[in-house]
Picture 1: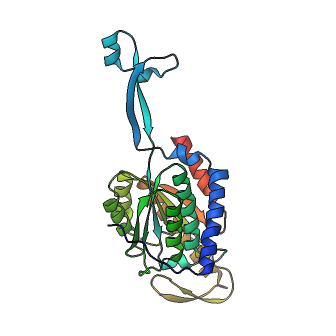
Picture 2 (picture 1 turned 90 degrees about the horizontal axis):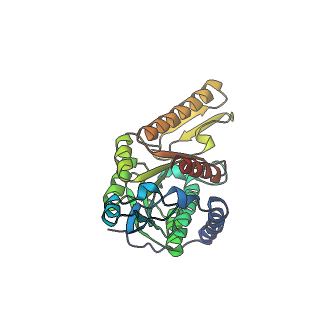
Length: 299
């Protein structure tokens, strides 16, 4: 069952942030993405509409040979696109998303990405739903249409206070498959700080059009040389004191980060899941545009 709406007493800073996100993402959708969303994410298929007489320029492959034989001259099948889609945003709100070494945290970046995708969807009259998760399912917002609904989705991501701190991608994918039985376009927005979820990825990609948006902060990939630093895992609370003046320590840190990223790339590729890499220190629209164009060429 859908989670009942949450009533928030939002601080003015969050209200301003929601408004800023709406203004920026609406502009991005209008000026940059344009009709790319529509061309890339088609409906569930083509729905038969009627049979009519063949006209010059019609596709030969659309000829209905049974009707043609019956009437003695060519007829073609006419189809219309089954346009309406359900779009589900699966957003990781675990404790690691609270980290941010540049202008915004990963959770704030996730909210902007979700807004761009949601506004793109409602411009095409699609439904938008939301699943927020940590090491448990935190909230489910059933798919609906309209601007007010999208603003609620953004508000939930920005203002929601999760109970869990860890990440369980497998449980989130299982939940998606149980509450959204029909094929949907699903955007999984996470930093993917989890393991043993590869099988669930493959199962989900067979039921849904699954796209992974992985969030990366530069300080999770490279350490500056600033002396002794205590590192703390936001999800487990584990702490470690490291000497960042030590070149071998910094080199090992970079190597481990690259290995994690490559494992993620391999897991998504083998599961047949499209992957968009989003960095907190660069404009997220650039990789999104690149993805839309790549996907459009492939289609």
